[in-house]
Image (cartoon, rainbow, N blue to C red):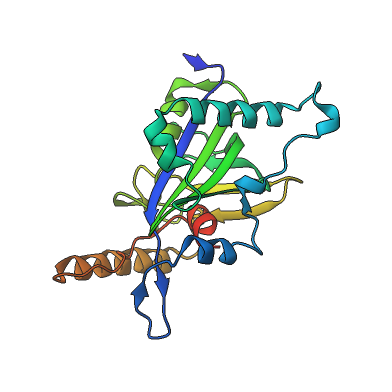
Length: 250
């Protein structure tokens, strides 16, 4: 069986930012200053003010410090000057990062996938806001051990998804119908610094299969209705994965 010694992958999720006013209507996301103020009491820290490694220990930076510094160096020098003028313009782009999430555990769906979760280190977690209404979530992951090629392929296919591309059903031991997303993780868990659970999404729900099925069907019906509306600019009603939703909505 072919194995990969170490897998490093980047999850990049662009999205449009919306706010809901008192009438329940979707409006723009406000200015960059408004956005920064909304994140003041969250785990997101402005990258411009991010704490670097201890200046008294310059000769012995940690692996995390080296990774961050080398990433910043590459991100800057990769681009031509005319791109840098936009990318590093504080009036147009705001960057935030969080360091409270250290690991991602995923249970993969599909034939032959292990029942135990696969573990990845979260090397970097960034949120970038572009003026006026565009956001980008960037997660850098690295596997904590060797992985068979089949699991590597399934991981690259499933972890990146923010909602199920289609719905599938299965039968449990009681022959009850279980609805789940196709080509989609059974569960994803974000783990904190002390090993605590930060958030999880889409557990394999055998106890409440009927409610799960109804939720999926309601989502499909809502999506079809919105698609049929002419000149509708409101966000579509997707079943966003809770772990990505948690990082972008908090």
